[in-house]
Image (cartoon, rainbow, N blue to C red):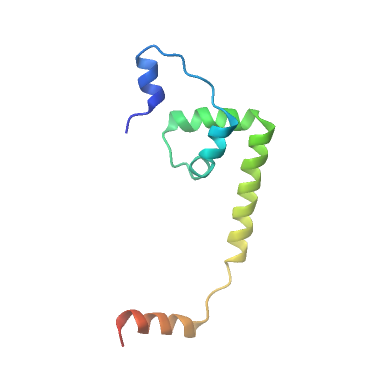
Length: 90
């Protein structure tokens, strides 16, 4: 996969700094590390230096922690039996 910034650099184009809107648009990919290293570095550099973007990233991390903690209760064994029975058609 070709990164647009890499192509722009090869062509001698100036790489514009990232904006808050860009960070917001790609926040999930940034936190999940689901993007090219160069793009992630560019977004992270902005997010780390911008109070609003830092706050947005921290809020999302906090929400993810709450969800992880809330989902730690195991499902009842009877539910597992019902699901397996349904899936196997028994």
